[in-house]
Image (tube, rainbow, N blue to C red; front, side, top):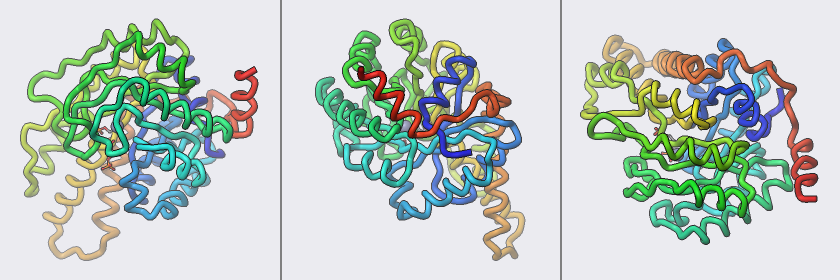
Length: 334
Ligand code: G3H
Ligand code: 13P
Ligand code: ZN
């Protein structure tokens, strides 16, 4: 199946009332583990690369791994998405690389730390939308900021999304999908006690923008089982806490359609490699422990595809091309 515009994947998720995981990738084993999960559960999916991932892989390597994933799985709709683009140039670069979707995170300045004003966010987001839509590429924007600072993305203070601003923002910019800040953050240490999320914000935004797929960043669940493996085999992860699956399912019901997951993949890989190395001190073949890491990613992602309700939906629709999207965007302008 060709690489599919993310807008189609998310619009179909609105129709089918399910969520779609957007999984961060940095290497072949992650991509293969995720694809095996998608293929077995027949799930459409979004593979996303951060700026850090593009730098680590010198861009081209990651691009061809993603293209290989699409070629190897002709029955699975896959969107290739830039995660947290920090300026117009980064988004342009991702579009040139062949991504079918980009996120412009205009809620923060280019340093990915300082808050922008509403007007600054609208300005950069609208510029990216105008450019991306000429190529049929989907755009995700963000309003409000997450709280996490663990991974270098995030301002360190939470600014929840105002639903009235969200409505104005989508109308002024023309974004295809909107990331909301409802109290989640990136990384493994999201909460100090039982998580409280501002679910009402999702419902209120959905009421105002029924056709706009909403996005939840910082959606890793940080399962105890994964943390325990890491700690059992020499790691030191204390007081980690994520978003419970039940909360994600509620968010999906209320209107979230794209669910961003990076940390759980990292935990799965780290635990699998630590365990394998500890149990096989004689091993020097990286295929052995990277193979275990791939399996751990597969298991983690597979359970999410089932829990998010994505499983079984890969064959629901005929994929659109970016050329189809160019015409669709043009006709909307008339
Ligand atoms: O949004 C944050 C993702 O977890 C990406 O993290 O910038 O370390 O690749 P990264
Ligand atoms: P987690 O750190 O919860 O996996 O969130 C990832 C994310 O939002 C990527 O954009
Ligand atoms: Zn994010």
